[in-house]
Image (cartoon, rainbow, N blue to C red; front, side, top):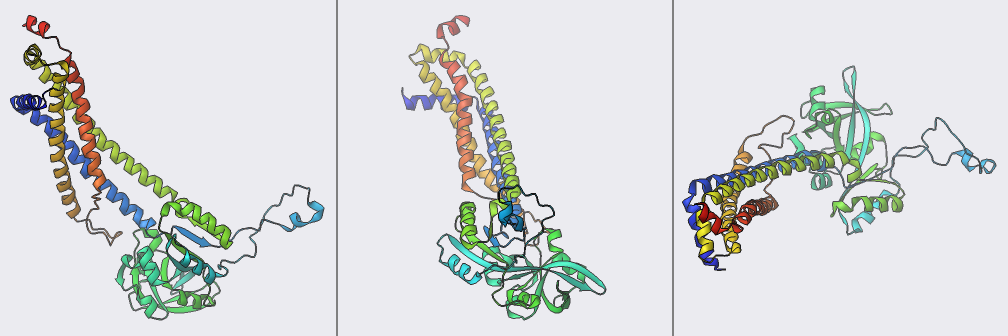
Length: 419
């Protein structure tokens, strides 16, 4: 097989039918362009939506859940050891939300090589007093530096400064929706009533907006020290420890280990946010399905064009075979034609797909619910470009293989006799 001669003949056939070649290449280019732009946009949107929750969620949350005592008194009685005891209206036990021996737990997490970082937290329900009206809400006591480093806290501050929580005593950052309810401006004092009935004034130093409006209508943030004073607790009182791991996939196994070792409840991110992972997977699957469908449609276009080319070039095929070309040589000529269309059409598609993604990335996207987002999200993952290149070559190869196989089996005697 003379490779140079086969490429030369394929080039001549491509140029001879340049209009059909151009149409096939444009089909591949359009498919690759839309595949890159669609997948980049959909994946960027997935990252945005998941980030609203997952970026603010720990990989493992260590806490004490209020739940009924497993061993009821009747089960501990020797008289009823061999009985089935049915107990109704079981109430929660005397367990507390406070994490026991929190200092030792934090030190253990600090020494764990699997842990990227951790942040202690206190969560308590309160009432925000607006005249004679009490608005139910939640105050989250946080370590501002750890929360900002691990959970991007300061990225969601739309007014004021989040770090003022650790600088200004008795200060608070209100959720944007909650601040609108209270008509609270930065610098104002808001009155808070705790669950024990005690009232405290706190100074507003900022607004927080997560992008989930219902969440922002109830949530507020203060320093851990401030919340400990609100609750009348000691300086070692915390209700939650939020842990970020170096490998998020290890969260379920590590959470189980922590639950047993620390004698506390530990919830991993996969369990807590399973619905978001499912939604992200489905959206990505739809994006890939649409993009691959476009490439397959382009493949059928190439298949039809090559079929027509073979039908019109039967005389040329007969001459090639009559002059000593084998069926394999003829097959490779048409495969080279198909792969050339796929390669150059795909290359142009990668370029136009990238340019279209850049254009979309510059389109303004301003919404009150997502203050940190200024333009439409795009993901420029190189894997998308690799998938598009590989699939375009595979599609065009298959589209050319069937017609080329037909051409390789053509009998030159029958073709010439028919003429």
